[in-house]
Length: 502
Image (cartoon, rainbow, N blue to C red; front, top):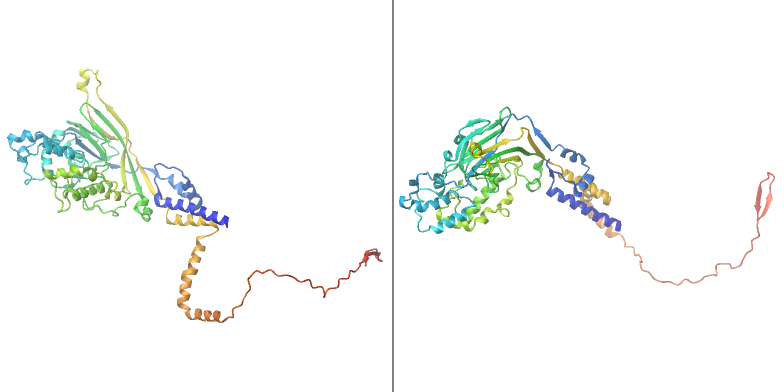
């Protein structure tokens, strides 16, 4: 009994480990692999050692692509206010224009990181604000006062060729502020966000796989996949200012998921298949984690303040833009709105097909303090972002522990520890459920006859009690005389064989 109990406990512990693995990590990608105890148990009891060998094939390179879409590069000036804008559009009197410059400059930085700063400026100028919001929304105002493309860029190169900066960089209003983006998925206007169609590709035969830009103002530079949109979770890749030459070399890495992962839930595979989560912000475009987070924050802002910040483009008529009077509410709930880790952001997982860019090398050059004037005058500052190597590294996410593997593992553990198989369990289940039910429904009369026959049998009484009894010595039937037996005598026969005679 004790051996059976030990076997049952051991089986339950191992099954619990296998079930936890099936729920948390049933897939593998070709990035980093760490052998743990539960995985060793999985290899032993599931008899699927070939799954481990398939991991070695999880990393491959794509040499067949002759062209590649360059990633999105977003340039967000630290101070996007344009002093050359036409101030008549704001309906501000010329005499009061100088007093409203702090407010307009603060509004041009509208983002989650600057809402409190804007709110403080509004409190200081509450009696001096003279902006007619009936003629335009805050989004329209910010697009008018933000720095123009011509004033921000002065030279651009793509694939080693000189290009017009304003032809390849489009304005976009993001949760990080007002920016200009190269190869964006969507670009912004004063009223909406529009899908960008004129995408720029690299070719393997190009002399240079890079984008080079020269700026007039200090800016944060963001780098992300074209499938994503600018989101508050995406940090700046670097900060550029005048007098610095930055050379960024990147490597493209793509992760794709095999079709057999559809048998798992979203929480098990830790990625979202297209169509599994509805994102209505961009009319059900291809799912991305950044788009899902963006929609989540916009909905939270509307729930708290009954309006949406101007860096969102409303897809529903009930969503109105926040005005100057609503900024106080946004500032009050800014942390709750931007933090979505414990809210609707829990449903936002990475896409099962996503691309990221790793920085292979970052070179920063700037004149030393003791540099000659001639060197400083001839020093060229700017930003260069180039592809480090052409082959695309692809990581495969595949299922190594599906439902069939789980079933095999449970059967192996039960057979090893208890001498029990899943087939035996099926037979027991069948005997006490389906067979009993079918017999009761189809052979009801036969069961009644068997019951009557059993009831008609006489009941045999058995005395199972334990009692002490005395045994009497009855010697009348026995002869107590002692008989004497003499020893046997040895005699020799004619054949020379000895025999014994009593």
